[in-house]
Length: 312
Image (cartoon, rainbow, N blue to C red):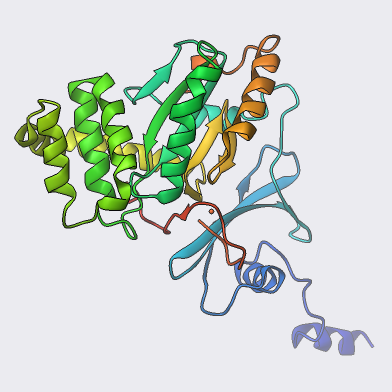
């Protein structure tokens, strides 16, 4: 009997229990769970310690053409169970991780420095949903909250689907370097004229606008080629990618992430709630600053293409 049992083990008839720590096993499981087609590329990172005792953290990314998504799973140390979601430290701001990553130094801004509510907006000058959001914010934000809000503008040009978005972002950056207030005039012009602009005429129409504002187009062009201007845009894109931005526009209100175009009435409710919260919990302020999945449901935003931000 003992010999028979030994033979059974030796030829593998007693199969080892499946483990989420085995990448092929986990990939097969997730493909079934999430309905990933066989054409989708799935990359599973190595497990690493998590901030939850007894659990390991595994990040996975999936891409299919121009769509993609990232997910985080927690795995028991024996690999028998997986949990999806995120953990929170009850003693800290629930958005601390986002706040720590939102670096807004030397970015265009408007509103009151040191305000209790800080909004960080990732946007793209060629994105129609961004145009809608920009119009809502510029018309309403400072009228409704003249001293309680500070907003930072962050570039996230979707270069694989928007032909002149990078040039528009670099133009804005170089105008900001010249005059921070003039940037907002350019911002309003670029969004207002979005339907008239395209890859072929952007520079010509931009130059006409620059001349009307007595700005030197040649100087702006020279700035756009500079490592400093390019680095500023790339840095903003890296921050967005690190925060898991999945569409433009994406807004962070004191670290709270809102994807897609949000009506101002909804923004107003969230801002008011934050003002009330910050009256007793001072943990935002100046301390800080959809990739769409395979769902057929359309999102109110432009998709971020996978791997558009080069890793350094």
